[in-house]
Length: 115
Image 1 (cartoon, one colour):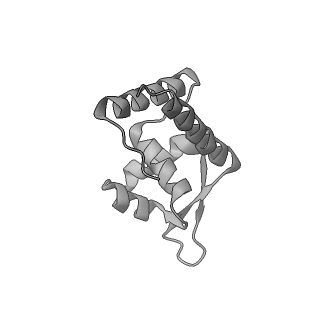
Image 2: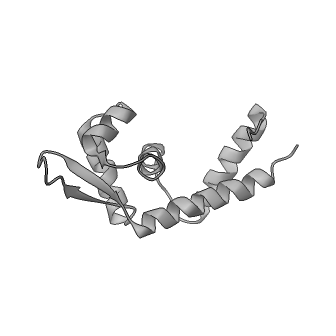
Image 3: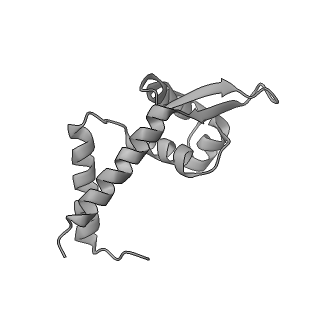
């Protein structure tokens, strides 16, 4: 069922969700959030090379973002045994819970939108 939002409602939702994330100490950049959601919403496997291509950035940019996200236990990395040049990005329990919390925040805030 498609949901139709006016521009103001979309911006209000975006604002309120981000405000909640900041209040909760979730301070991911837009790039980190895009990487996180790609990893958790799209089927694996995910590689540094693949994420860089999808986001239109360099591999070092992805690596820096993953460094931060790894410290937060949102993702982990391992070498691909079939091709040691590839780095596989893996989901973590903490990351899955963070994405689920994000979904809950968006759902709750969407219900509060003015008509």
